[in-house]
Amino acid sequence: MDRDFVNSFLDSTSNVLATMAAMDFSVGHPRFKKEELPISNITGMIAMSSPQAVGTLVISFTEPVILSLASRMLMETVDEINGEVIDLVGELTNMVTGGAKRVLEEKGFDFDMATPVVIQGENQQITQFSNGPTIVVPYSTDAGDFYVEICFEAIDS
Image (cartoon, rainbow, N blue to C red; front, side):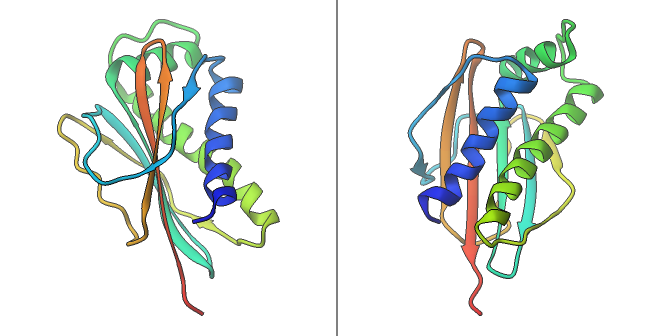
């Protein structure tokens, strides 16, 4: 994965947070995933495939972060993870991936996207759909941190 490829997902994540939630955040340094991340309470995952590459985007939130984000986006106080929050995580995952897909199409990638999957609960173990390297990027907010994982592998033609 080259820098421009990864940045298409990071830029899309930042754009969605800024425009849909008006949330202040900072983006940490990308790194290769070597160990499990801190526990999250809810995760959105979406698979993508093209003739050139296959992979996944994963966004993992702790409860305080997703409740803050949901409250901002829904413009009402949200104090528990419920069906509406679960749907929101799926939609956020879809919006981030869709934004990245548009940028990647300009670079010659023709990605198809699966339906987002949302996983809720403690002690989540996230398994990627591809065997490529996983890039992890922490995002920090006033409510805490969340993580974006990008894992893609090239398809030999």
